Length: 236
Image (tube, rainbow, N blue to C red; front, side):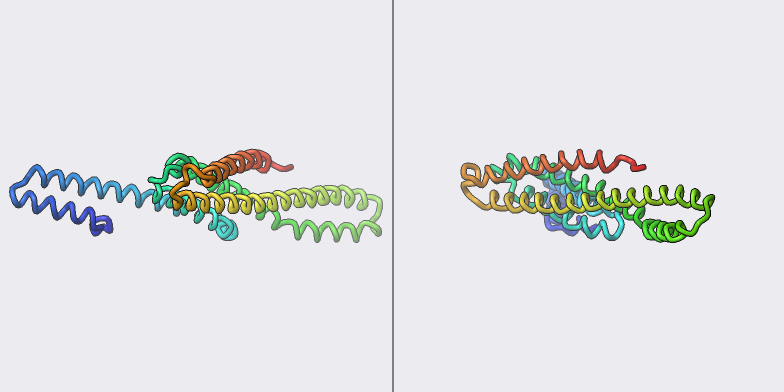
């Protein structure tokens, strides 16, 4: 219903009705077709915006907080590309920049989803550490049979604790990736804005800087793909 109140669709609807009322049926029909087209475009835009807002909504609270700046930067890059489509450099590089930005955004969703799963694994570390200490305290006074059983259980628990160290390292790696993504997207956003605002952007170093930022985004996305393959491997 909001689309019906927008100035352009409303003007086309009123014009169409008025033209038909004055007997200018052909022009009236054209205006009504324009009205329908404007509504369709507005609806598609609204749907795209809603889908963009839904990205990352399934993440846990902590991960959504980490993801929020990534999501915002990608939206701002897309908005800059859309608003400055007349710029020669933005026209050439902007589409690719927006595509790479969305690729990194989606990679961050996957990485942060994994982060949430890893954080849940770490919840058991406290109890594992407690049980390990308790067994270590009992070991010196245990009899031969109990000692053998305790030693076997201790070996298993210590292996589990090593597993937790690996999990924590993976979480730190993901956090580092989030910071890298924020820095790269922020740089791309800034250079897009600069390129769009300078008259000589197509011939000065600004265009070169923009292409350099695009190259950096691609390299970062590739490194995230490789890291995801490693982090996604199940740990025993």
